[in-house]
Length: 280
Image (cartoon, rainbow, N blue to C red):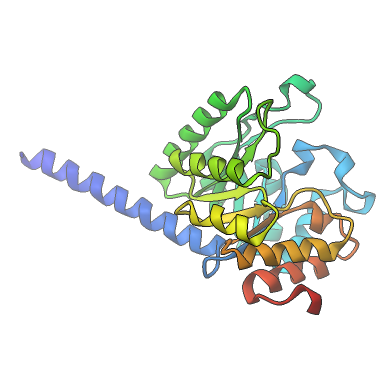
């Protein structure tokens, strides 16, 4: 091998090594000690104003509450991250959501996400991760998986971890919380390069443990719609942790709660300390 080729190979190996280090550093910020509570706040784009009580309609108010509550990371769209940077920068890691859809679309287009952000912009903003959704089993699965693969490729070069919102959805999915379906969606997510998986809870610690043990990356539960009984959600979080889960990605069960800070801190107690929900 000539000197030029040898030098080029060393440069490529160094870049690969640097990006690998960068990913590990950023992952450690998001999942502290391998565990994390990620505050999800892409609902303004995905669901619209109906998700928010009047006093929390301004995203700055909600992000401020989340930061002050001590969550481990925020998942935001690019625009909200820009509008609230003075609140989170240097205090809480941010994951930029790079795909989405609005609820204004026709019903037959609700199972298709599209690109709303780019990895380079997320890095330029100081983000520690990016995220994208794939509706496994949906008619548009191929396009979403291809988009996710492109995001992974971009992120690998820049040392940025990628979280997938692995949601089974589509005409062939009878029960999206079924253990086999969730396990399949999680495995497919690993196959296309996800570093962190956010997916549905399967109903019990035993079944969720089998999902967690079937993949080699951290699995976090999707918080979903707000439960009527706050304790019920806390019990589910405890079950996820007992199953070996890495934590939760939660939005509505916190920002729709009358006690925002108290709910967030209770979830953090369970995830990081294993506290019994009945003591909170």
